Image (cartoon, rainbow, N blue to C red; front, side, top):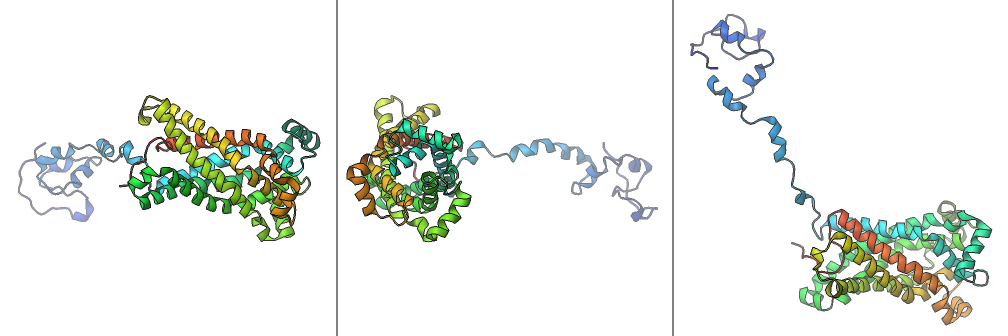
Length: 374
């Protein structure tokens, strides 16, 4: 609507009695803007009334579309703090849940190591536990297992990704590519040193709860009782044997997995990794993890027997364990069960870990070089 060009003059009504800024030059100009529409004449900067219609072109409904980020903006950048945080969270899920799930196997294995006369085999071990403790007895010690291995998994996977990148940067791209297995070994060993410091107190309480019936029901009463008996330092009595078990285990776990997965993609699958489906990639992760787990169990088993022996007997030493079990016993007692347990466990851990990485938009582990940080 075009208003007539009427010269302005002083209003008859005082300005504080009305809100419109429209010049009261005529009766028609006062009646035209309704109360509902008056804000539209008050918002724009002072312009000729004839241009009001041009101000209505950009509608408010369309503006939010320019504020929604593209999906690619939400992806986690490789080797960023968010990347390492995601790897840490994936490690919590992969290690905590899997170790808790195999608590019955771990319980029988520990008792076979500590009391072989009573727990002579896998089948008889389950039978003894069922008769003496019932079905509940199969999950005795699950809380320290869940918490301890969740803490260990967070440090193990998170720091492995960090140290792998750190050592690769130090070596340079050519040396890192040529000696990548040494990068895997160094990164996994460094990560496991930290991870075992987080695990050791929980592992000490877990073994005592599982191998000494009546000691405690779980972590809440077992931890204070353990500290009263042996002091806080007693929680780390088994740290050196734990390192002896876990560091070789983790070095084998990560280096073997990385090389097996790379070999599968190169020789068994005709497509490049980035052209394979996510389901196929996760299947490769599980297969590579299972094979790596079998090798891990064999390498780390003597130290596993030592950890169980030292945490079960107060004041026991490595020499006591060797004298009682013998070198052959350290290497073989409970080994078949541990191969089944660790093979399944490691395969499941890699499957869960890589599934979590896929869930947050990251590539699975191994099979192709990671992109360099920009």
